[in-house]
Length: 273
Image 1 (tube, one colour):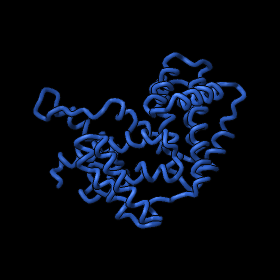
Image 2 (tube, one colour; image 1 turned 60 degrees about the vertical axis):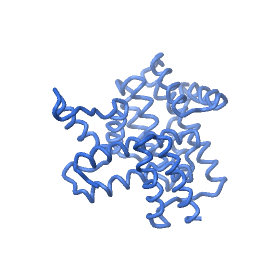
Image 3 (cartoon, one colour; image 1 turned 180 degrees about the horizontal axis):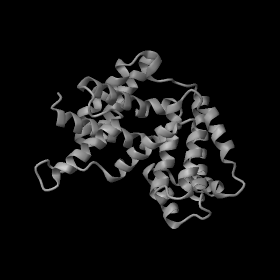
């Protein structure tokens, strides 16, 4: 099974490369290589089909219920928060039927009787032993909250409760927020010699190190290791095999692209081969 999943990893790496253009093409083979070079028990935890379906259903339900709860954190749901939820549905390329279901779940999460703790406990139980799936769940919530009200007011405090309910530390939550803010703005690629370019280039490089979760003083070998670790954590095949719904794979691909761009920027600035 492990060898079969490694082969699928290579294929998916190539497909992601095609989807992401020139940069993706350059590293598509590397994506597959991460699966091929990882130890068998660390590559992909393939689950029985029933378990995958259970996790996927629970994940989808919790995603939009909790998103509705977050949107209602200050007592009302603004047009911007509704638009943010719609934007997530669009970015995830949900089908018409899935959008209809997601809206119903979002509405259920806004109700006073919605039990947030019970919802998170159910998700945590379904995803036990698979922290990367819970991290993706939290990333999607942060993404919607940033677009909805920029994490202002009661939303930030409630997001802290959601992180605790999914066993994600406050430090990790802060990192997720920082990385998603960078993703929203994109890397600033000012030329070092242009007006204001040096400052923009320095900021861009600092953001890239933050995305890879490695310090600027790390050695080249440590940077490569951090890059591979982040790719492995967000690899769509790994997440899908662990139960992430097909509809949520787009989020993982976006994060993978961001990781690739960050590494390419650092590699270029350092002159790494």
